[in-house]
Length: 125
Image (cartoon, rainbow, N blue to C red; front, side, top):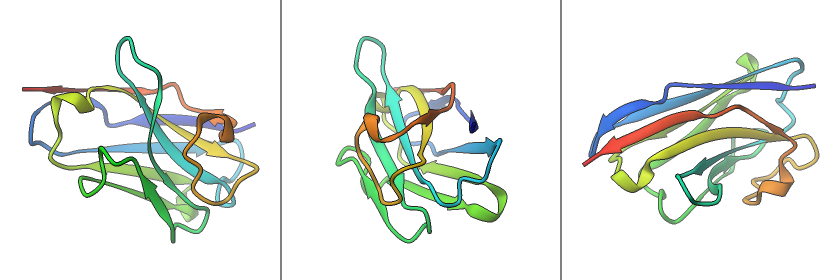
């Protein structure tokens, strides 16, 4: 089993930056794809970013491209999502997830089999 714990969420103002971290335990996730999703109140959970198992390939939702950067440190079994130029519409609960079966950059929820509990990000205008 893999346990994922997100941290780094908080309340920020529009235009600020924030970095979310995801710590994995239970087994190494260095061979797994890692993704980030978010869910705003009343909306479905949506894809934000993904990084392949080596860290060499990334994928982003159009709404965050050029503002967010996903990364990982396999030696530490961790991943991060650095968010710049935050907007009120970025508000939501952010989840990290890993896929034990796919090593690339899946953009769909069903591809991921382990999820964290989420961390709240609130961006005020």
